[in-house]
Image 1 (cartoon, rainbow, N blue to C red):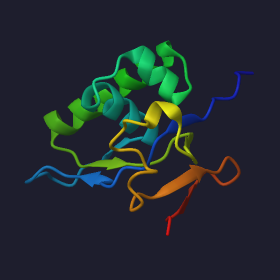
Image 2 (cartoon, one colour):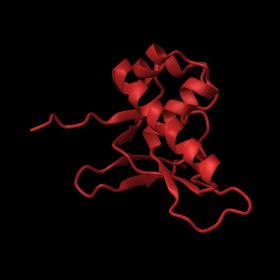
Image 3 (tube, rainbow, N blue to C red):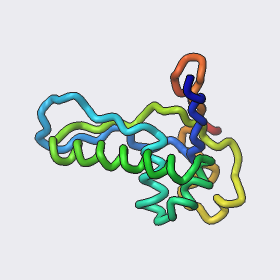
Image 4 (cartoon, rainbow, N blue to C red):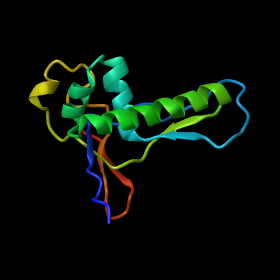
Length: 133
């Protein structure tokens, strides 16, 4: 029996959860999971190394590589085949408090109170979200 997958720690849920190219024909959408989104955000947008990304998400560096490869494959499928992309799902937990490594992070959910925060429920498999007041 395989060992259970660790929850991946992400800073916040994305503001945009659906992207569709103009003129795309109705095809099966590509789904980018929250952890794949977070890896893309940390590596490509924040220019972190894979080691830094792994530490931030509390997973191993090889896991970051696997997640990154899958996310890039999905984004290429969306672009090349003109498919809509949705963002959601995955075994993630959203950080609940400001961590020292997030002090200079401009996209930290604890600095932007409009971002939705939540945690994926292992029981129901759905994301339980809350908005901060």
